[in-house]
Figure 1: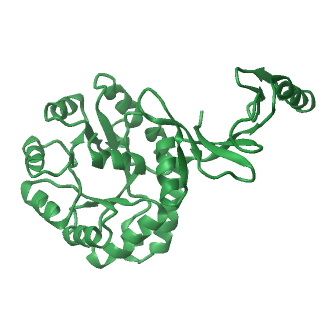
Figure 2 (figure 1 turned 180 degrees about the vertical axis):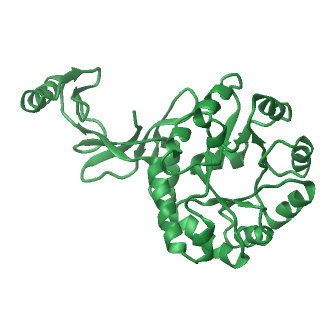
Figure 3 (figure 1 turned 30 degrees about the horizontal axis):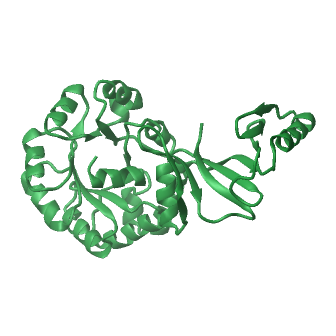
Length: 321
């Protein structure tokens, strides 16, 4: 993936915006950033799109703002001049895509069939839009289409909402989702930017899915660790399971055979995607111990410790099962 698509992968959700009045662009972008989504696809369905992109790109250079519904070269030129960092098309128009490539703007063309995916591969692309997602068979069709095309990544858009978001994002070939449920036109027109900010934050929380996985308790020896686990087993029915470096009591308590991270032990927080969790927490000022980072075969994070302890406990992120 190019750098823009990699950044959109970490953000996870791209708000798809149809804006009627360019004066709303600045407060809207501010609401999205405060809510945790510094990205937007501003669609060229309205006359205000070009000016909205220009305002957002100038006022908020940290925001990944792109142009959507770009159907021809003239719109592509206007989008680039306004400061769009990427361009999205609803369908696969080869000449349009080739033109966008020629002017040096990353393009994510719309696809709905294997034939269109193969044309995208022929043009050197490894990220495409899948549109309209729900009406075209949803995540089941994406999984079926992705099977032969192991290097292709998809951005489903159309019918995505808080309730089905993670059905899509849980598939490793989906690099982000486009959605408009937190930026509906009536909310923008009514100036309800506080509500947009709250809905954006709610979308991010739903995407990340933080929950407590287990608590780790430091002990000095294997015998001490088993003794503690035996108490949890005997009193609460948390079945003991002996591992190489620790003993679990059920799934919620891990007793370490030797002193690990943290004065008292560690707390494992589960999330749906550790790469995204690290990105979003870092945006809030959270520091991570990068020496603790562990990666899977696809070079995605599978363990990440926060730099600071919480009440004597080290805290690390792990993937939800």
